[in-house]
Amino acid sequence: AARRSAAGPTAACLPVQAPASTGSTLPPNRIKPSGTARTATSAPPRAPASNKKKKNTSRRVHADGPDARQTRMGSLAGGVGARRPRFLCLHGFRTSGEIMRKQVVGKWPAEVTASLDLVFADAPFPAEGKSDVDGIFDPPYYEWFQFDKGFTEYRNFDKCLAYIEELMIKEGPFDGLMGFSQGSILSGALPGLQEQGLALTRVPKIKYLIIIGGAKFRSPAIADKAYANMIKIPSLHFLGDNDFLKPHGEQLIESFVDPFIIRHPKGHTVPRLVDETSLEVMSRFLDKMEKEISELPSVKAEAEAAADVDEKEVCI
Image (cartoon, rainbow, N blue to C red; front, top):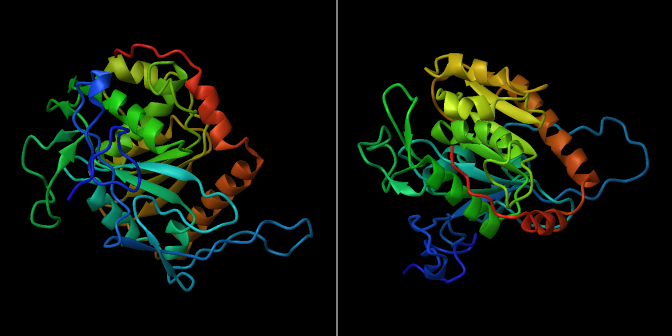
């Protein structure tokens, strides 16, 4: 049976109801649990860096990965040693956090997923129509917001932003966002909206992005703000040769400074990491995050500083 808590969702809980005292009109928050039935593979933690010089200290990720051990899901955290970058994972349109967990953990080498602290959340709104993955993955299915055929008008977008912020407060602090499809469109826009003070004003700045099958928002009301300035945070972009969103993903990449790019021959999907080129790019991205995080203030201190920011009414 689902556990309910007045404190909202945690990485170790089943779906819980939002606190009644907040007056929130958002649907219940949902986080993928860390129940014993759901597990993922993880590599043993690396030892802290030594001051002695070593040859070839860069990480090499291999498709078969190291000997793996199991960790609880909810997040792919665990172990000791260097802190892993924590990512909130935003799934695709009319899928779910559980489906994205299967897409990522089931396709990426254990050494990659073990290097990341991944938290998979459901979108706030139940699917309003048929899901493209119906018959492939089991329901329920969710969507982050609704849109018209031209993808220029959006419904419940402000509620979506508020919902993500609440997730980041209750489940964070987070270092970055990982998104696929609709989740990647959101992820690619949120750093710019946060920079403009239009979203995520009560949480630490987003530092990293992983964009899988991404695109830009087309509405000028959002795009003019989200992509007003070049996005300078480290970002990793997956582009499929047969993805119908590939041209839009290329346009999104133009808004980023020095992006990491993994190209694959598949379509609109979370690709497997099997070829050496893709694994090398992933390794460099992981190494960059690891180096920067080791030099950053603690995420707890950042979260406390962000909590001091006055709450703003966000309306886009």
